[in-house]
Length: 306
Image (cartoon, rainbow, N blue to C red):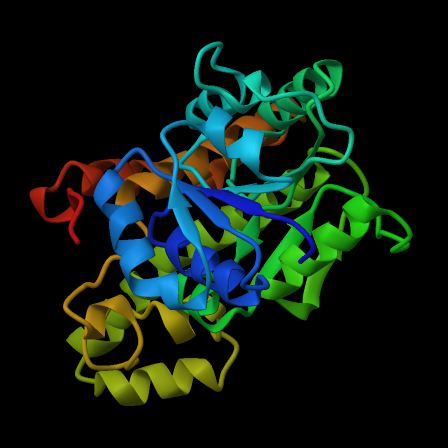
């Protein structure tokens, strides 16, 4: 990369994404970081300062003032609006710039993305591109995330396109970069994908329970499903039975990868988008009710840990 970079949101997925960016940056450039939970910033700096300079800044506006490329990975639409448009701390308060790149990796609704993009453009603060990711924490750690980009495939002739490619390839698999054509379309594709993945995880849990209760060895059952028509990414990576898939959260003391409450957000995006186009979201509505109940279980309430 030929510039300083900012990263906002050092959560479960954002943290390893930021690690990948810092490792890919030339040591003469600085990575600026921001998160509302300051211990995450401090831990990030302590663990990754050997790869080059890292500075913790106080506001998103400070990040955009210092960086020519900014990546954000925050929980949802309200947080995106806040980091971009807040009058006192938002990135829209940074100086004007024609070549500043905002790479929005959060999963939000298309309307919010298009609204924020229009406000950023109107204020001449740079270019906003929605680029939600898929693959979860394991792919983020391995730098093999899928990027679903709300932009046409770049021709590589502009500074912005060069920076965009460098950033994406520092975190993602080059064979899993999808150029969807325009602002919001990357998110529309990601919402469609999450509609499936959030719902199918419940099917996996129920199917494993049926087989195990009937007497099938859980490892054998997972192997059968993996090699049959029930095979899915979620079954291969997020199997809910401990000791079946070595890298699954269930086999690692339920290590945090994706909060139960976030399933509600992702399913809501799919349900609301479906209704916009007069599609009956019957599957997602059923899944939403299950996750809503689970989200209130004390075992699913996660607090920050270092």
